Image (tube, rainbow, N blue to C red; front, side):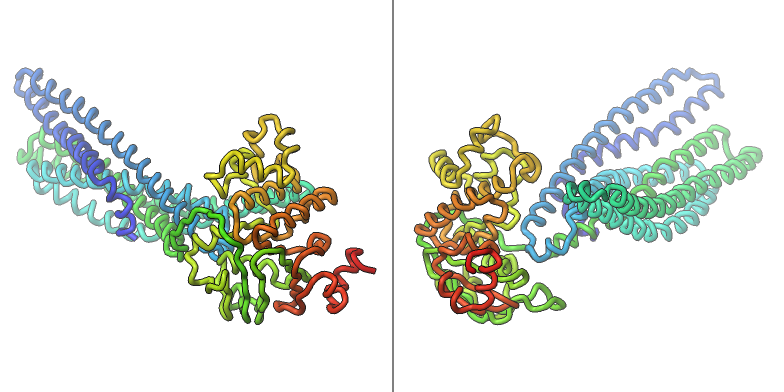
Length: 568
């Protein structure tokens, strides 16, 4: 974990070294003050002029303040750079994770890792490490100066500090464990809150505000309790440090007073020694705080590593390019979503010829949407063969494969941003003519004219300012702009009224003359004109044919058609 932390520091090492040097110079200026104070006391006792020692003391104060401020600024600036790099690296990894891994993770917890955990890295990698080095230098310097003044008093001080330091060292692992649990609790709280926000209208409509407030409140309480554990162990470490200095002061005062009384030690030396003793407080405190921050950073690093160690999809970007329609063939495909999950596809076999429209129909749970998930390689099938354009799907570079597809999901997601940004999301290089053609094709002209700023109108979070049917048409236009060789439509008409469904059927029929269209439909009226209909049930294919053929030959399809008043 420490090696992982240092990997974030490496790009900023020069600035960190400069900041560390400035901090060391500031510390050196601070170390000179007790010695200069001794000269002031000696000059006063001997009746000499105190102007010279006071001037040097003032210069040391000013130099220490200015240089320390410069070093602190560099540390903070570097810290922000480290956080930026960590967040970019983590977001890059998250967006390249496999769909299967993201499906089992909680969005709120992922956000917590990007925000909270990376912020902890800044503390440990700047203040925690660099300032600890500066504190160690100041501590060693103070000890050297104290040794030069009186070795006996130094031994008394070190004996107490070492004993208490051993106690603090035993506390540090407990702080790391407590901090790790606290960060997990914060992530759980974010996940619970994200759940409520994602279903905000459902929560309101169900009158479940109080219940959800209670659930989030319980998660917040658990986070508070875990945070209190961290605060308790941290406070104990801080109290131990404070007690070490206070006990050392009393012991030095007692032993030093006796040595002054016996004439073996000057009063000015005792005063300077006591000043150096109090100079031990900041560096010891910084070292303890650095140790605490290191434990927090290690806990944060462990959570970040959990994401970085997940397998990522290969970086393979291919620009969408028009081409001839592709065919698809499933041969005895077997798939399940996990070793402990039931089989979803159990020997699925069917063929989609290049061009035209093929439909997948069947009851819920038959495995229709899984066909699309396997084609997009969101998941890998465990058995059988999937061919795209006569080529095993695993032999396709991932970027090239997905660039050949246009995919419209069942819930037709629309992202926050303008209507133009959503339409061009999958085809950034589309021309204005191509954009207008896609808008006309999907009957979005009225929407563009109605919006106050036309294509530049923000559509709100998740497209909340659009109707369900408008979101579906936006998703379809977005897919068409990609000029796909295979268009995948998952329940593309589920939120359309009868008029818009008819229009969309016309659009799909027109598109099917240019490319391959594979449609999943529960509303059979959408696909009665399909060239081929594949009926799925129980993880397998039970029948293939046209609407008329299936009505006469397949009982399940005839039943589905009858329930939708397509046959008597």
